[in-house]
Every structure is written in C-alpha cells, then in structure tokens.
Length: 413
Image 1 (tube, rainbow, N blue to C red):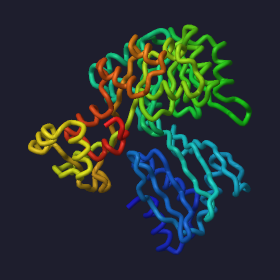
Image 2: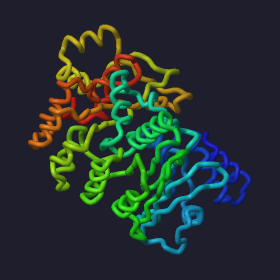
Image 3: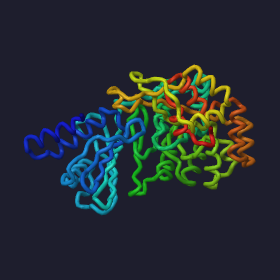
Image 4: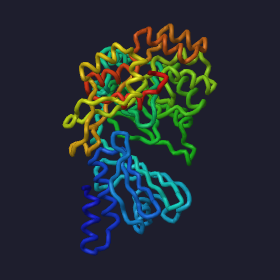
C-alpha cells in the first residue's frame, strides 16, 4: 500500500479533514520512490485517479475522492506559479518542491469535461547517471560513438520516441567530452526545458511566450564562442538550418529529431526543405535509441512467447534459429512479485543503432536514395540494428520477445 493510500485511510478512519498539500507531497513521494517518470492526476465522473508511468508503462497509484480534485489543482498551480483562477485553458509551468531537494516537476494542466487533468514530468537528478559506458552500447558501437563525439565539428542527431532516452544519451555524450577536455572547452545548451543541471555546461531554458525560441536562442548562442552546442530538439526548418550552419562553421552540434527510423532522419530533414548536400556534409552520425523493460531478477522464469511473436521471429531469423532458442529454453519473463510490484519487470535498459555517415551514406543522401536503401547500406557497412540489440537481450534472458516487438517498428524487424 502506498503512503498516499495509508494517509487517506488514516484520515477517513479518524474522520479528519484531508490536508491537500500534505497529500500532494505523498503523491510526489510515492512517485519518486517507484521510479516514475510522470504523474497523471485524472478527474473521472466518480473519483480522481492517480497513475504513474514506471518503466514506460502507466500503473495505478491511488484513487482520491472527487471533491478534493479542485483543491489538488489549486495546490499544484500554486507550486508551479500558474494562474489559479484559470480553469478552462491549458497551462504549463515548473515546480521545485523544497521538500524534495533537487527534484523538479514540469507541470501540464489540460481542461477536460470532468475537470482539469494534471500531468507532472519528474526530473530527479538522483535517479539518473550520465555515464556513456552505461548506455547499453555493444563494444564496437561504444567505440564508434566515442569517436564521433570526440570530433571537433559536425552534427550528431539522436532519434527515437518520447521517453526513449535521447536526452540521457546526449547528456552522457557531453559528460564524455567534459571528462576528456575538462574546463578547456565551452559547452552550451538550449533546451525546452533543462532536464538536469550539468557542471561546466551553460544551459538555457526556452521561453516561447517572450519570443525566445530555438532559432532566436541559437542565433545568440553563436556569438557566445562555444565549441559544443546542444540543441534540445530540431523541430522546424529554421532551427535545422541554424544547427547545420553551426556544424559547418567549426562547432560540434548534438541534437534530437523525431523520426520513425534512424535512417529516415535524412528524409525527415529533406522534407523540411534542407538541401541534401548540406546534410551529407554536416551530419556525421545518427543514433537511434529505444528503452526495453528488463525482466525482474527475482521472479524471472521460462515461458512460451505469444504465437504472433514467434512468427515474427521465424520470419526474421528463420525457423532453425527459432527452434534453437526454443530447445535452449531461452525465453524468459518475470511472473510478477512484490519486488517488481507484480509487473514482471525491474527497470529498463537501452538498445541502439548507430549510423555512421561514411562516403557511401553521404552519396546516398546526396542522391536522395530511399530510406530502406540507406538502411541497407548502413547494415552492409557493419551497423548493428535495434532488433539485433533487443534479440541479444532475449538470448541473455533479460527481456521478452514481445517487449522487442512493442518497441521496434515492424519495418525494422
């Protein structure tokens, strides 16, 4: 039972009034303790539900009497310096509860038919480490990524869905640069928002309301004499053009871009009207990342995967390989226990694919070759794909076959 549930039960048993600020603190505390990345406080017809996203999956935390919802909204608005009287418009803000030292919340409030829904993204510096060797790279990929990051100029892009570990990978890359170069190098970042404070990095939060967006920030940053520039996300043509220009004029630029696949990054930028020759001359590598849930070490046991998962494996690897795994009882998953809150999983680990832009890739980009062809060129050049990393985790009994198929796009399998 969570501390929030215990508190509510104790108040109900004593017929005492609920202290809403205290209850909100219990919710935050329970969420941090569970390792959650997000808190969802949702008004329903008969109650307010609180769910938390742990290891990428929403799970139930506590149900709260509906009559307390408005006071909960008011409390969180005060914490995030939002307009308490505004109830019919979305609002976004940030909170740094003093009771939770170092923890920051990015608060989003959205009006629904039953009241305002609140989502708080948790940034907990104590829960993350930014060690490049802990990103889940195989030995060869780790060497290649370090070589890319160690270059003096160029553009490195990271791609993957929301919450896949892109920012963590960028922070780890910057940490590697600083570890090697020390304070002899100037590193600056433009983020929306700054998720973790990094030593020796000049980090800046965007403020779109005041016109301080990515293009405006990057134009100003170019006059700050940085060697390394981190751009939180390339969202539009203007940001892409400035980032590419920075990479062409002697800077190392590291950023993220939303793309369905790693090799599809080039098509995504070409669709933003970026000239292929600029991409070919500036992009030195693209890193695709995903996070897979890891089997709980306390309750992991052999199991039979779902038929659709076995069929996908058969189509990709062949029947002989599938039979080999079946005969070795290589398929394992957690059955659920108290240690993993009956989820069967205990934490997450990343899989990745690193596309290094060699001469063949550059030529394909210049000629606007299809994404699949660029992918084939990279694989023939030695790139280990996301599927390979996920399958190795299955062989090592660290995750399930279904988990790979959930995270890796079907056209990559």
